[in-house]
Amino acid sequence: MHATRFLRSGYRTVVKPILFRHDPEEVHERMVRVGVFLGRHPTARALTSAMFAYRHPALEQEILGIRFRNPVGLAAGFDKNAQLVNILPSVGFGFEEIGSVTGEPCPGNPKPRVWRLPQSKALLVYYGLMNDGCIAAAKRLQGKKFIFPIGTSIAKTNSPHTLSLEAGIADYVKAARTLADIGDYLTVNISCPNAYGGEPFTDPMRFDALMAALDEVQTQKPVFIKLPAEITVEHMDALLDIAGRHRIHGWIPSNLVKDRNNPHLAPSEIQGKDHGGISGVPVREPSNEIISHIYRRAGKRYLIIGCGGIFSAEDAYEKIIRGASLVQLITGMIFEGPQLIGEINRGVTALLRRDGFSHISQAIGSKYANEPIDSPLP
Ligand SMILES: Cc1cc2nc3c(=O)[nH]c(=O)nc-3n(C[C@H](O)[C@H](O)[C@H](O)COP(=O)(O)O)c2cc1C
Image 1 (cartoon, rainbow, N blue to C red):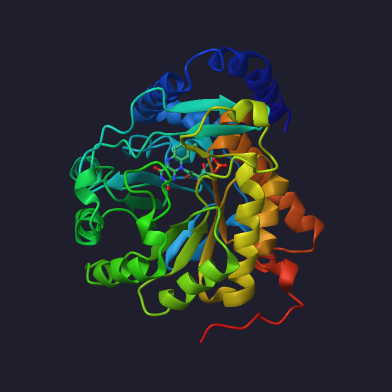
Image 2 (cartoon, rainbow, N blue to C red; image 1 turned 180 degrees about the vertical axis):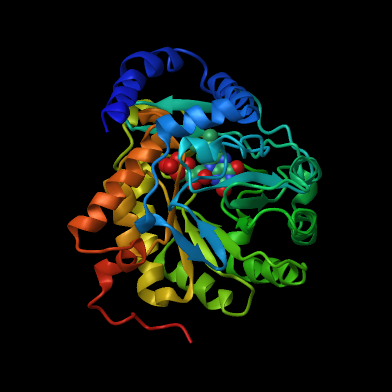
């Protein structure tokens, strides 16, 4: 406990002010290099784990045949090229999602393409799905044994060549096939706000066509859909209705917000910045609303991985009681420090105890325990 407080105050007062003085993309790259280095050395991994990781049986779950040591994962977008699989368990994460990985390698949008919004506790992201492509990701991970579950997030290559419906679907299918036997679950990212042609596969008919093609890919892995943050109830219901016809096991609400009028955005920080999606605190409420809607409509039929604006154990717990079985984050770790993961796990354990739960599974969806499932899915 004291060690965590020490790490937190060290990050706040020393490390963060130094990191926040440098270009965010450069810092991101440097952090990945440090992570790769530490991940190579067993002693470094053991020391990192002793400093950061927190374990408790109340947090351990088996979901869709996958064992999760704790419910806190690294969201897609930080480890785009699957370089941190060795070190992240020692930092305390229960799982991670690599990518998003696309059919073809992609340099992303021109720089600068990521900005900090400190007042809003957010990042403005315009990377545009830069990654080495699915073949390089598969080569990096093939035959490796992982210490924790890995999700492979796939998206459509950011290029004019994937603009038609057929080419877009073919690109997703290539990535899904190439990564079919790698990792523990597959995420289909239909909600990147920064790629050529926008988010065509959030349209229900196109979503239906995409999922029909992905149904044909031979894989044992469960399939999750990464949702946009700004989605109406009617739109979500349309996707839920279509999902019943396909091999879909769960949802990840949500990706970056686009709305510059989001009440949690400081207008001065976003003025003149028309490109890009926003992470962090502005995503929290939209994500929570979608989690509640899916859970109230579908109950336990679908798994939910809650993502967006988690900066504390309370933020994570709110998503869990609304119906999320697992949670993911990026921005909270950047603003609060890597000790946040252990703090969340420790804090969620205390919140479970406070509410009389002996295991996390009892808390999932407990906010709606006395409500009937709203217009249940068939
Ligand atoms: C730098 C950065 C890059 C991201 N890239 C991706 C991506 O490639 N694929 C994806 O599905 N989400 C991506 N996201 C969105 C995150 O996975 C997450 O949905 C969003 O940031 C909200 O979580 P947070 O508030 O904890 O950051 C990215 C986010 C950030 C901050």
